[in-house]
Length: 444
Image 1 (tube, rainbow, N blue to C red):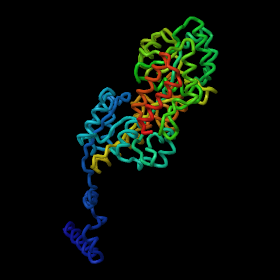
Image 2 (cartoon, rainbow, N blue to C red):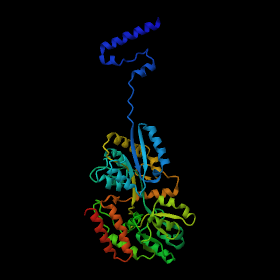
Image 3 (cartoon, rainbow, N blue to C red):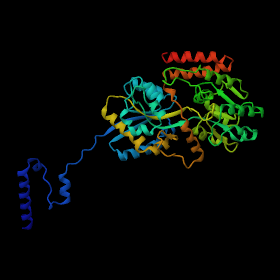
Image 4 (cartoon, one colour):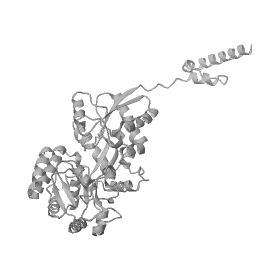
């Protein structure tokens, strides 16, 4: 009987509410007598996001090239965004570009690609294949990301074809043990890992006079590791590889010509057309060369076993006139989105990129083995004293001129130039020939 009375009262209350508002009568408000379960049932369920499948193609950027590591990251991503499924294809630098270009031609480009601005911005972006990611570049992001990195991700007209994750600055290295034994160590600023051009040349001469006839090699069998040779001759007297606008090549400037002439004349420095950058690093690790121009943290890690206890590696910035105004070449890696005409996939791809770069930053950066493009992110290798040293070189990251038109042709012309100098061609003549070739490729 009590249950019947309660039910009757509830009906009267509902009818009374309906007289005041037709809209409320459609979704009755719960009374104090309603049970919690009834209250939950009355509220409309939030619609679940429609499932979306997107593809990521990644070049071998540290452990981003390893499936088992990326799978762990994807599992964390899916825990936060279960409606987005990401399939991954792992590219190599041997045929990766061919695979991507073939996919573009066949209207089957991946949704996301992970690489650097020279591909995402200067190549595919310049060809109109990429989505503008300007909405990801918030004022907060711009304030935090290094200015040189932001400039590299922008096409110069306001469009951003890359959202960056990590970076590294390429440096050089010396055999500290031999430097100390010969007296060349006095020319090194051990605290800052820098030196002046004058002291660099004095150190090389000291080693040569002590009997080390192959101190360093300007390698030029191919373009592999050419970021080292470019940084060497550009920094020595303040030259640049391109103009600031990234529209033409400036290798035949007086500063660059002087640097190349000085290197060619210096005892202990050989122009070697038989090796590339990786092979130069191997010779340094074996103790054949006493300095390496193609070096960074990853190069060091890959040769730790070869070096063993034979000598101590000391990372160095390249020499510059005052020793501190150094502009290192570097790598920048991040994500771009191909414009495949599917807005749902573009939105899902942006969600993934924001999660990797903004929400899961430190782990994502650590997976690369490099450093964050954000000034606010802590050193991911704080417990590794040696690797942290390499992190200090990020402050010297210079202009990312790899986005200059004709870049592929310019790289090939650069090592041809070094080969010509090594066989006796006057430096100015070889540099002028390089500029003519490179600028023609750049449309100048």
